[in-house]
Length: 377
Figure 1 (spheres, one colour):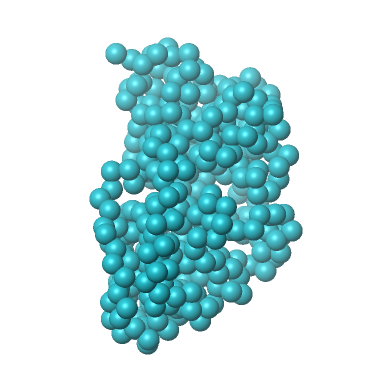
Figure 2 (cartoon, one colour; figure 1 turned 90 degrees about the vertical axis):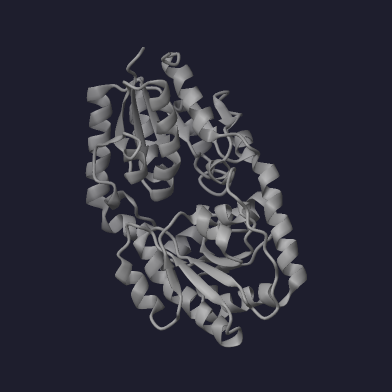
C-alpha cells in the first residue's frame, strides 16, 4: 500500500498541534498518502486537507456547545458521511471526546479501523467510556502512563506512547531561574486558546498583575496571545499595565519567564516541563462549573497536580480565580525563596514520570501496523 488514506478528526488547538507532528511522520513514510479530515492550521501546514473550517470547532463548556449545537450536529453528519463514502484505511481521532465518541461508533459499525490518540480522561469522569473505547477502537494511544490501566480490562490494544509536550520541549534550551526578593522577575499570563475562557479569566489575570506591580515595581509581564483570537481582546484588558503581548510558541515564552499564571489545560503541563513555578486558574460559567463539580471526582484540576498526585502548584478555581486571590498565591513565590526552588524541583520531576518517548513516532508506527503498510523506500 503506497498511497494509504488516513482521516483525522482534531477539534481544538492543542489537538491540532499534537496531530501535526504525526502527520509529518506519516507523509515522511508515505509521500503519496491522502491525509484529510478535521484539523487546524498546524495540521494543514504539514499538507493535511481540511474538510471543514476549523475555528467553529474550538469551543468548550456546556452552554457554549449548546449555543452552537446545529453546527456540531451538521459537522458530525458530514464527517460520518465522509467516512462512509471514502472508507479510509484508518481513522485517527484526537481527543475531543464529545464529538469523537459518536464518530468512533459510526466508524466501528462500518468496519473502519480507529486509532484514538489522547484518550478521554476516564480517570476523572465518565469512566464507562473506557469500556466503549476498549470495544470499538483498534488502538488507544495514551499520553499519561497511569491511563493504560483504565483500558486494559477491555482491550489489549492500548499503550503509553509518550506525552506530546515532552516531545516538544525535549530539545528546548532551559533557562536557569534565580529567585529575586525584590520581584525583579518576569510573569507570564497564559489565558488559554478559546475566546470564552479568555474573556472570563484574562481581566482577572491582568488584575493580579496590577496588584503585584504595586507591591513589586520591578515586576514585568508578558501576555500570551492565541493567534486565532483578535488582538483587541488582549489590548483592551492590558491597557495601562505596561505588559507586553507575546505571540510566539509557549515553550519559548516559558523559557524566558520566571513565574506564570496559566489557565487550566495543557499549557500548565508545558510550563511544568520547563520548570516554571505557576498558579493555575480556572473560571467558566456557573452552569458549566456546576456540571463539572457533579461529574468530576478528583481532588485537583491542574495536570501537574493530577500527575504528581499532590498539589505542587496552587489552583485558583471559579470564585477563587479573582485578581486579588491569584496575586496572593503568586506573591508567595516572590517572597519565599524556599517555596520557589522546591516548586521548580518538583515540577522537573514530572519529566521522569512522562519519559522521553515521541508520540509522533509511536502513533505513526501504530497506524502503519493497522493499515499493514511498510514505509516507502
